Amino acid sequence: MPEGSHGNLIAGEWVKADRMIDNINPSDTSDVIGSYPSGSAADAQAAIAAARAAFPAWAAASPQTRFDILDAAGTEVLARREELGRLLSREEGKTLPEGIGEATRAGQILKFFAGEALRLNGEVVTSTRPGVHIEITREPMGVIGMITPWNFPIAIPAWKIAPALAYGNCIVIKPAELVPGSASALVDILQRAGLPKGVLNLVCGKGSVVGEVIVNSPDIDAVTFTGSVGTGRAIAAKCVARGAKVQLEMGGKNPLVVLDDADLAVAVNCAVNGAFFSTGQRCTASSRFIVTEGIHDRFVAAMIEKMQSLKVDDALAAGTDIGPVVDAAQFKVDLDYIEVGRKEGATLAFGGEVLNRPKKGFYLQPALFTGTAPTMRIAREEIFGPVASVQKVKDYDAALAAANDTEFGLSSGICTTSLKHARHFQRAAQAGMVMVNLPTAGVDYHVPFGGRKGSSYGPREQGAYAREFYTMVKTAYVQG
Ligand code: NDP
Picture 1 (tube, rainbow, N blue to C red):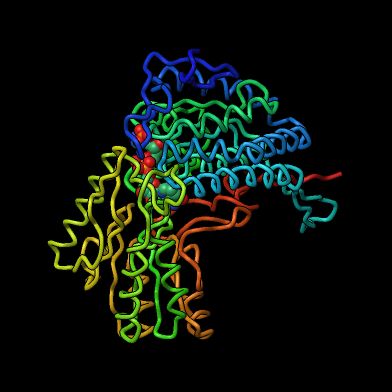
Picture 2 (picture 1 turned 90 degrees about the vertical axis):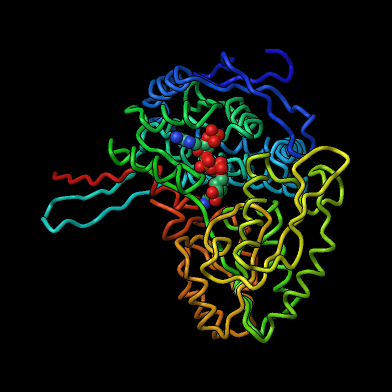
């Protein structure tokens, strides 16, 4: 294949697709990172057939084999974290330290699940019938279809691929069409670490083409999806209709509550990090600041002061705090929401300007709205950009009610020095993850990740809990 030109990995071979697309750097739209496949339905079908054929042998492989491959791949990812982080930042637009951090996380995930391959255990239970022996064991699900979004181009593929392999499944993965580079590099590392041909297959391309085949194929036993609510719900309906297991991680409208007794510096750091780092393009980003009356004005003033100091520039440039928005379509969505907020009567207290930089990219000054009513669209709908709003509330009870007043339930945060309110919020927040004096975004790699209400569907991802999705349980009764 010519340099800069990439393929799909099908049955252990890198093969070119009939249609290729350019991977463009959002910090500099004249920079073409490479040419990647826009795979066809036939490519997806070939990948599924390869995974099916590889499954019996991989399901029977020794846990030591799975450990060795995942551990070796993790070692390579960690050794190459700077290079992989640079590729990631170049194709997605998060800053270089964020890109390197995400690549590091991917390596750590591979190593964690290497260990999990050895730790898979079952249960022995005493039967109610004398002489009968009961064993509860876990078996691999089969062939897993994986559909991933653009905002974590290496971590999300890693946290789906690693447990699937650890527990003996084969894989067909379709990364978001915007960011094929990081997933391709990860898959290449895993393949070279010693995976048998066909165990892991990568088909880059459109959701409406490759994704559709994966979701609808009777040879895909389970589908794990991360992305938007609309796409996720449509995928779930198709999977349920044909009886396939499905797991969805979707959007959020995550609140950060700031109480009168909060440490202001802690609250501002949590708010700026949670709302604007990674350009606000995190499902766990804080987009609603719910602030009690006594601290409201000081919080807003301190936020504006901090936001003025943030450097929005090329993701790869030293000193950049916030990189560009990922592409023209998301840029338009962000600008449209800023307009919606203005029209609804919220006050744009800071930012929201399109920024010009020497290189042409999608640069947007982070935006903060105040005077936001809970009924406004900017307070209810996921924006997925560097746009956040402040709602003023009377007291803790009103703050808790406002925090829970959403169709989503991914991550919910509070800044307070009151142990009573912190512990109460931890119990009462209707979210899969609760953060106390920490940003709503930014999680560990070895514990469960996921949400409630409209944010998630099916078992949790990550940590030992990942086995709920990637294995199925068998109960055996034995006499004699
Ligand atoms: P999308 O839902 O648009 O896309 C996600 C993936 O689904 C992409 O690979 C996409 O392909 C694919 N897809 C699109 N249509 C179909 C289809 N008909 N059948 C099968 N697959 C399809 O989300 P984005 O990529 O825009 O990601 C942003 C969203 O992801 C946000 O809403 C965010 O909240 C959510 N997210 C949630 C996370 C969580 O864990 N809760 C983490 C990260 C993001 P294509 O490349 O063609 O678009």
